[in-house]
Each structure stands twice: as C-alpha cells, then as structure tokens.
Image (tube, rainbow, N blue to C red; front, side, top):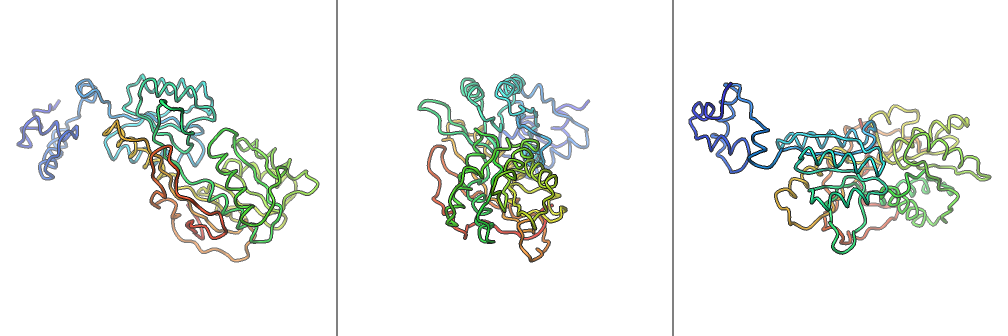
Length: 382
C-alpha cells in the first residue's frame, strides 16, 4: 500500500507539501498540486482520514439533519448540500428528525458524537432543546430553510440560510386577485414554523395590496402534510361561501388539496383556481399545469455549506442570515388563458442571494404591491 512518502518521492516534493495538498492547510502552486494528485492516482494512494482527524481534530465531515427527506424540496436541498460538500472535500452524515423536537435533539447529539466539524439543520416548530444543545456545546451550525427568532441576550446566535417566503406568497395572492378572485383561501403549513408564519404574512399582505379584507375563515392549516391539507381543503369547500381560488403553502399540501378538490368533483381552474408555494419536477405534467413559486432549493443547500465553511474558518464572525429569491412560474392552474412557453430550469435555481445581513438586523424594506421585484418564469421547471 502506497504511503505519503511514496507520493512525495513520485511527485518530487516534500511530504509536507503532500500534506498541504491533502489538508488544504497552505496554498500550493497549481502545477505542484497537480503533480501530487497525479502521483496519488498513479500509486493508488488513499489518505487515512482517521489518522488525519486525530492530528487535525477535524473529520472533514458535515452533519445534515432535515425532516421529510422524501419530500422533493428537501431532496433537492440535499443534492445541493452534497455537491457543495464534496466540492470542498467534505463527507456528509444525514439524519431525519421527523419534525419532532425530542427526536431532533437526539439525532443532532448522535451527529455531534460522530465528531462532525459542523452541522446544517432544518429546525422543528419547537427547536428550544436543539438550540440549547448546539449552543452549550458550541457546535458550528447553519439553520436551514426555517429561521428562528433572535434569541435572548447572551444566547448563541446561528447563521441561517433560507428562501424568501412572504413576498412570493403575496405575489400569488395578488396574481389571483388580478384575475378577479375576491375569496382566496389559504392552506397554511404547520404552526410554529417560520415558513408558515412568513407565508401567512405574505398572504395577508397580498390581500391588503389588492384591497381585499382578510377573512380568518378562509385560512386553514394542513400541517405541511398531504393528509392534513386534504382535510383542511375539505373544510374550506364546506363553507357557505367557499373560496373561488386556493393557495397551498408547500408541495405536499398541494397534493392533498388536489385530491380533495377531485373528491368534491371540482375542476381546476374551471371551478376553482389553484396556485402553490413550491414547484417540483412534475408540476408541469398536471392538467392543468400548476402555477407555482419555485424555491432555489439546490442553491439553498449549497449556500448553507458555504456559510458553514465560513463559520469554521472564522468562528468569531457575526452570525448572518442569507435569503435567496424565488421565481414565479406562470402556468395555467390559476386560470390564465394563454399557454406558457417552455424554457429550461427555473431562474430560482441560480439567482444570487437577495439579502445577506447579520442575524438580528432588519432586512431591506419591501412592498407587496402587485408589481413585485420577483423573478417571473413561464414554463416548466424540471
């Protein structure tokens, strides 16, 4: 079995230079680095990561804790995290907290005991135990997708990466209002999640921008799941004056809402218009095709890795929150007559962050008028 000394002799460099190439501990000239990599390939050299971690106190591994890994949204985030981690020489350990605060605390502790260098976590609706554990053990952590309120003075502040939620939701509501709808229902997510509260805010802002009065009876909670959304949609349809348009707050709830509408014999958009938050690869295959907000899921995952690596490099830097813009994908479930064209992947996948500010500071002011500064894309996102 080839050793580091064998690689150094073959490449004509010192063992220290080979070590710097492997560990990234010092800049190495490109041609020298390539010579080391070529020698490693030729000799079949495999670095001993366990021995390296004992020397450096780093495992070059990242723990990822996200619920509903089967959800296409989180699956794409996972792909972004994995690609960015691999690009920077990190492996990934994955756990599913199942959106349960107690289980969340346990799986994060297990990842920590595996000596991951840092963690990326999508917190549950009640992350108090999670945040207390991470803060007590000073675990470098990036909170993903769901942000937490500014903690009390003296508490640990965490880096956060997520997409915009309020403004894109307002865009869906004002779009439906612009088509003449006056009773617009919302199937909201699980109470306690920041994404739920922000999308509720966007819903109210969209109504206000369109000159419509908010009606609590038109807001139901599907608990971010298909089955819950099916029941919640049925409740809306049972009203004496049901909505003429419906907005669902994530892709799982869109499935439940569609099932409920079908069970009630309603056709989209002839009987009721539908817009959804979250796009997915097969949304363009439904009949009608789904008008949706596409989140930059892969970019969210990749950005979370970059923020975590910045934290590992500079442990004392101020915490920051990065928000990435979404794209409005205009199809036909909203009731628009025109047939959208079919460009490539949504701009939401590659747009730069809309805001990046220290945690706890106010972001730029926004207006939820019908003319939102939101990327608009016609056609499929697949």
